[in-house]
Image 1 (cartoon, rainbow, N blue to C red):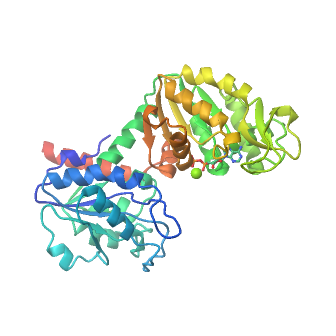
Image 2: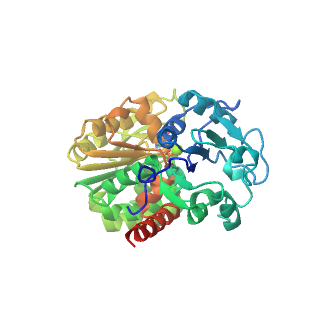
Image 3: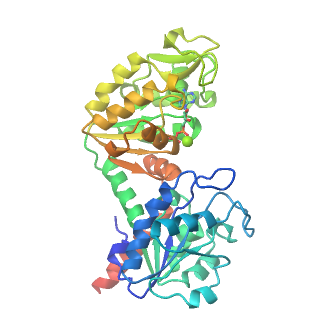
Length: 401
Ligand code: ADP
Ligand code: MG
């Protein structure tokens, strides 16, 4: 990776602008329900501060309307939580794009949070004018927001073109390194598990992924769509019938690598207290819902996981939130934890499952970026990373001359 890292940059006396990903989930009252992303952003902030920088941090939160800051969009709760984590007050600045009093009084050791950057007109369109204004605020631009690297926006992309120095923060660099290790030079066999509910977004990555992996384990709505594609019956289960053609094409090209479920845990209703019944796939009835992979399927998959060199995991293989339909996901999670393979997991619900089954500490790397993680697996361009690499090569070239 050709980009500069924050740790390569001398930040003493400099104004450092960090684009973090503080887009945390909140309840109806705006209370933070999971602060993982805030905690993950602390190392970059702390590093710049201890090395004598003045630090500005911003992030998007939710999907605000540009030009309008509503109560739902404010980073206020994040300023409070970040303050607790840092052990100091974190001032929140509104209308910050043009600088002003708050900016001219910034000195080394200061830490401010800049309001939701997605409220600024031009942010989503990757506006050059907006990026240039923001770039004037800093000496060093640091992108530490892995979760948004697949989206070219003013704070994730264009700003990196205009800031005097542009670098990657430790969280972003760490995520990219772990993903490269898993995908570009994996220890073989490379086994991917792709499951969950977002069938249409995930099916499109499977073709790219299937070509790279040695085995592809499917579950959830993805597996159901594959079963449909082979002419099997899935009753009323979650699937994407429109993508059966695509699923069939993938199976034709890679069927040897994709072991389909042979049995399932079914129910007549989608509910925590629905009665579970284990069925062979060809016994699934028209009014059944497949809610988990069955025990025979689990036994068939466990040796693949135990023998893997590298494991990529996105998506629970069943409705793990309901205890009666959690066994498949639990068994795979425990097998991944016990496997000597380097494992990497990503996706909001996948992380919830990992936490529920208490295997967090035994997963090699946990990726915080949902869409960006899938984008990387698919081999998509990541514009926010490309621009940092260009700037990094430029900086090295200049240093050589
Ligand atoms: P992630 O957030 O990890 O990317 P998804 O959002 O795609 O994963 O899917 C997670 C959801 O998929 C979970 O809430 C789980 O209950 C659901 N799910 C898994 N298997 C099934 C199934 N067979 N039928 C319906 N929902 C399922
Ligand atoms: Mg999800």
